Picture 1 (cartoon, rainbow, N blue to C red):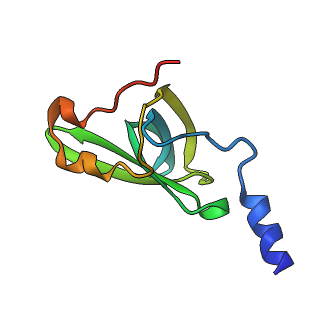
Picture 2 (picture 1 turned 60 degrees about the horizontal axis):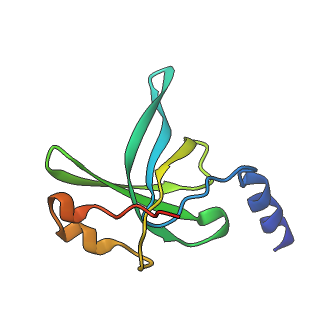
Picture 3 (picture 1 turned 60 degrees about the vertical axis):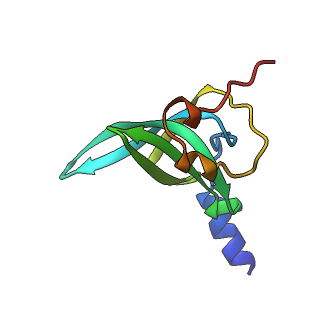
Length: 114
């Protein structure tokens, strides 16, 4: 069991991205096409965080051409280059799955003002 912990600790990122539920983020993802590699940005609202440790993930949702798109990103994945928090969200729930049923401005999360 100690060997398993050592392997999982070696795979953890030193600077893991700090994202919270309701944040509007830009996720920079490495995309491999043939022998070339480029960075693609996926921008949206964080609607869920799951698990913990090496298996920790967060789900980002956006509406593209009128269709809702969700992607699940592992926090410690080498394919996730960086995560930029554009704005913090003011929320009162742990999961924002109710945003899936909303359309237009009702699907937005209010900004947290400190």
